[in-house]
Image 1: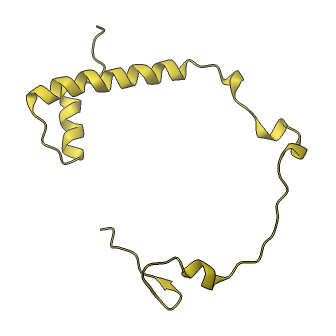
Image 2 (image 1 turned 120 degrees about the horizontal axis):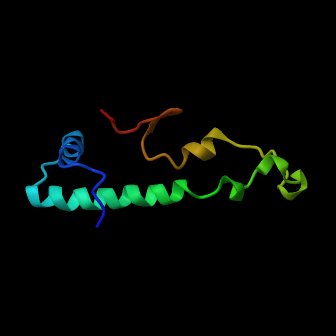
Image 3 (image 1 turned 135 degrees about the vertical axis):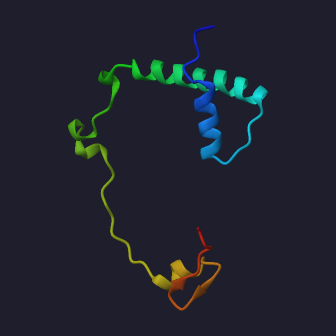
Length: 94
């Protein structure tokens, strides 16, 4: 196995940021798993950009035409579970 790219300190820091308590056993396991994930990213980074599709160079005739369709706020608001008039009530985030 190659040298881990993630240190135990970095695993602990990630645990702190995620507000997780990580055991010593899990720290070692996560160090290997996260290092393995980073190795996969290195492989992806090596993929040639030549395989990227550039939509601007393709024939615009290949795309579907834009179609304008009427819309109604009432139709959209019918699917909202909680509302007050035209306002949507959403759960608090923070």
